[in-house]
Each structure stands twice: as structure tokens, then as C-alpha cells.
Amino acid sequence: MIRLGQFLKYAGIAESGAHAREMIEAGDVEVDGEIETHRGRQLHGGEVVTVITEAFETTVRVG
Image (cartoon, rainbow, N blue to C red; front, top):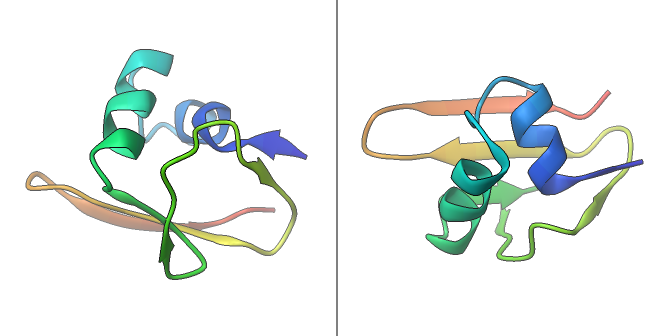
């Protein structure tokens, strides 16, 4: 298991924990198609994390 904020950092999507928090609080992060606003959410294998911002869109499956 890994927390959402940590996953965004380790996947190279967020530059820092603060950046991950900003994206999550802005509603830019979805887990399995649902907007997630809790950076401490526990992720398990198989979930799909999507980040959509003005600059980019990316989707990553939690391995």
C-alpha cells in the first residue's frame, strides 16, 4: 500500500509533497474515475490514478 500523495511523487507526477497536495486539493486527481481530495488515501494494486491539469493529463495504474 502507498498513500496517494506519496504515489504522485514516486511516479514523477508531482515535484514534491506540497505539489501533490496542491493537485489533490484542486480536484485534479482521480482514483478509478472519482475525484479524490484526500492525499492520505491508501492505494492498493490495480487502481487507476488520473491527473488532469492545464499543463498535462496522465493516467497511471498502481502496480
